[in-house]
Image 1 (cartoon, rainbow, N blue to C red):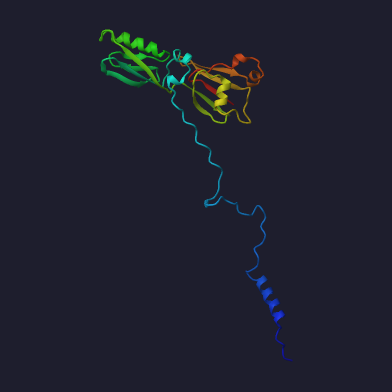
Image 2 (image 1 turned 135 degrees about the horizontal axis):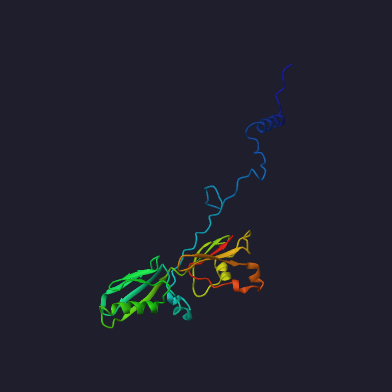
Length: 232
């Protein structure tokens, strides 16, 4: 018995069956975990964790940046830069930094220990030494950059590092400058590390919980240049 050729409707059904069984099938539905992460327009490289901002650089402080009442009382520290000049003596003009040992060298005056002295005291000492060579020397000393006037905040704070001091800064203010503490910081275990002129270091306790409640406020001391606040 001869086969009857399929009609138009039957042929269409067969074609649809063949298409669904071939590679033309619809792409399977992916779960949210399998779907690719969308990227902003123009970004082709893989997306990773956000890059943290670079640490803030220490900005040199000048003596003029300090409050008027602090300028006369400021004591030089290692790292500070001063300009020294003698009137009518062009060869006696020098910009120098205070060495780590606290000293500087100046022509004719030799080595002078200036760490811990005010700018005026340094001027007087240089003038006294130059009197042996120059009658009534007129000496000028200017503090240019106070790079030694910094404190350090380390440990569990938002922005650990070294920070320049402008005026008087206590412990709570230093914590604010460093962006505050992180979640797991031991607020009652903080210490201020301070080194004296002989190089001996001591640790001063700071109980944050007491201070913010108005108790034992004497712990909230004014920091000195070179102090290190440790937040465990």
